[in-house]
Amino acid sequence: MSLDVLLAYPRPAEESPAAYTPLSILFPGAMFEAEGKSVAYWDERFDSQEEFDGLARDAVEVGVSAFTGTQAGRAARLLQRAKLLNPRVVGAVGGHHVRILPEQVLAEPFVDKIYATPPYGEDLFPWGPQYVKHFARTDTQYFTSRGCPYACSFCALRSPWVPRAAQTVERELKTIHDAVGFKEISFSDPNIATGVWRGDDGTMQRMDRVERIKAIGAITRSLGVRWDGNLRSPYLTEPGMVDALVESQCYSLEIGCESGDDWFLRHVIRKGHGVDSIRNACRVMKGSGISLIYSFITGMPRETPAQRARTFDLIDEIAAEDPLARISIYQFSPYPGSPMYDEAVAGVEGFPKFDPPTTMEGWGALRLMRTAAYWVTGLTFRRDNLVKNFPTPEEMEKIQPYVDLALRRWKDRDVDNFPVDEVEAIVSQQVSRRHMGMGLRAEGFVA
Image 1 (cartoon, rainbow, N blue to C red):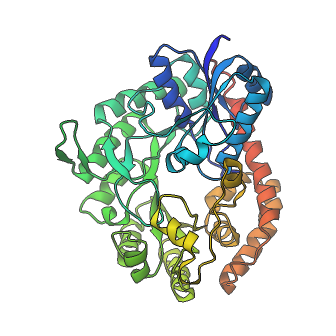
Image 2 (cartoon, rainbow, N blue to C red):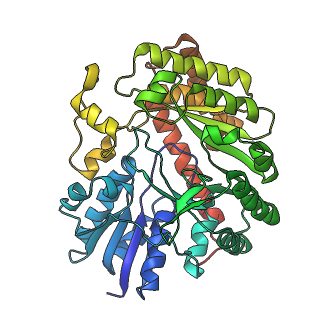
Image 3 (tube, rainbow, N blue to C red):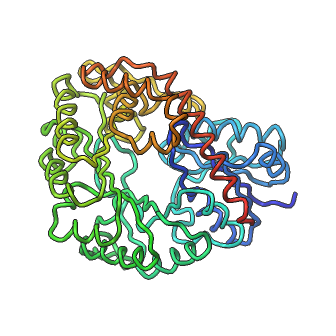
């Protein structure tokens, strides 16, 4: 065997038009390469099954990245295939799924090793000849910081916020840009400007959030690129924040709204702010030229029909106030390790008891986050995704009848009645075609 590690990135979702850089295998790969190991990278969205088979036969270890849901199931099938092709290969799993269910993942018959405790090379810069194509053929993704210290009750991934030094961000982004010339970049930090962290000496450090955005903006302006990212709604009303975002060439932000009911938001979700913070964010961002994605969740334990109705009313209010608003409603997903997971399993206050899967393929078979409400709001309020997935009039004709139906369902508040399977089949096919096209356009960037 001549290959120490094959790192594979399973397709994370069937319906999203985004095809972000697979940093969850590139960071660990940089770590392994720093240890002197030979590493190969394979991305299910672009690379052939034949290529995976050839690499797996030649590898000492095959590692897969897995997020709970679709990707976990696909990761399991890749490792099972690798074991059939090469019975001696070491099967390994990393990513969020193994962080929240380490013992369950390690119990899988095809898993020999887990990487459950970060960091996995996130402090390194994954760069070199064989990395270039992975940036060239994807929507460029980068982390200016990592971690989120907030304790929302639906989330299982609370961790300290740690910023990357501005000088490091500048050097690395310039290196990537010089090679692939990206025009847009997604800063996929959970919270790009949290501003408080513990330094290497153990003392608490503070950073002015507006100044942080300005520092990032100086870099994006120098490269002539625009960016999108994630911010908490209260940050947007801090003095000077909107101007700093506009000047930095930010074109899109996502804020986690979760609910339109103030009591539920504060006391059940424990978001740390109320509905007025969402309304104020909408007010100050209106007219800025920056489009906000307002992300909501429904179907949570203890949520009443009246509270859900208030969420829908707030969505209509936002859509009427801000013509650039994009809005999504995700179905609550019970992620192990979160307080709401325990409530879902217990079936509190009449919530249908959640019977958690016991295998990676079981988690992959669940339709996490995607339900009728997800598709009704997505087709109603996410024109950006529609245009990406169906870029020509002929392609749009395939989905237009479902868009029209979604508009009617939303108006009638009949959001739980929708042909989900039909829509997902159409969108999944379009996503595959788009990703294939992105891969072909990057053929000139060789390893």
